[in-house]
Image (cartoon, rainbow, N blue to C red):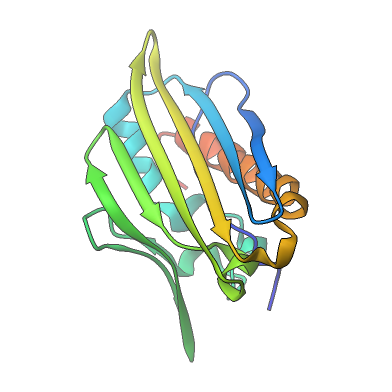
Length: 173
C-alpha cells in the first residue's frame, strides 16, 4: 500500500495558496486556495472527476482512475479496485456550483480516532473562479495532530496543483 495521506482539489491561473491555520495535539485546520481562469460551473464539474487529477501516490490502489466522487448528499469519495475498496469521505452537502462539504478522515487519519470535514467553496471572481478548500480534522490523533498538519497541508497543496493543471486543460486528460 502506498502513502495514503489525502484530500484534494483546485484548478488554474495564479499559484495556489496553502497554509496551516491552526494545529494542536488533537487536530488541525489547513486551507488551500486557487484562483482559476475558468467559470465556476466548469471548476465544479472538473472537481467531480477526481480520478482524472488525483495523485496516485496518495491512493490505496496506486491508480487514480479507481477514485470516484458522487457529488450528491450521501455520495461517496471512494476508491474501488479488484479485491478491495475504501470510502475516503462521504458527501454531507452538495450545492452545485457553490459548495461541497465532505466528511471523513483522510489517509492515515482513517486509523486514528479522528473525524474530518472538508469544506470546498466555489466563488465567482473577475476572470474566473476561486476555489477554497478547508480541511479540519480532530479527535484522539494520539497527540500528533500538530505533527500531521504540515504533511496534510503538503499533500493537499499537491492535489490543488494537480487539479489546477487538469482544469487548465479544460477538464480533459
